[in-house]
Image: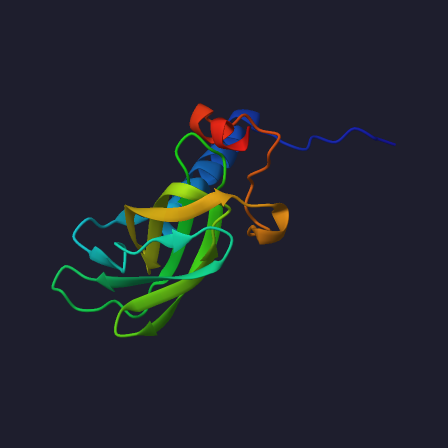
Length: 167
């Protein structure tokens, strides 16, 4: 009885075919799923950006989104990420389309100061990214008045200006 069988008669050819198959599969997956087209000719308008937000309370954030011809974009998947310079917050919120290119979400900021907003809008394979600044009034809020998804905690080192307010 012969227990040993020859599984592959031509190992070099089999390895070449396998590696080629894997390479082509990865390339197709990248082309179909991962590749995105970054657009730079869309634009956005933050509504009421001159108004001061209040830390520790729910604030409405409204953004108009337009394409390169000035037409409202109504079918994009829009997210906003909020963070502060020198801090670790990273609050990511989906924005809902209201009407005529207007997107909104509610934000709960955990402290006063200048916040950076990062808009990421996806429509098909097109991705638009832009930033804006928000100002919030108030001090450092307790955990009861913060967004539960805010990564901020008082155990991380605080900037000197914030540390002076706490002492």
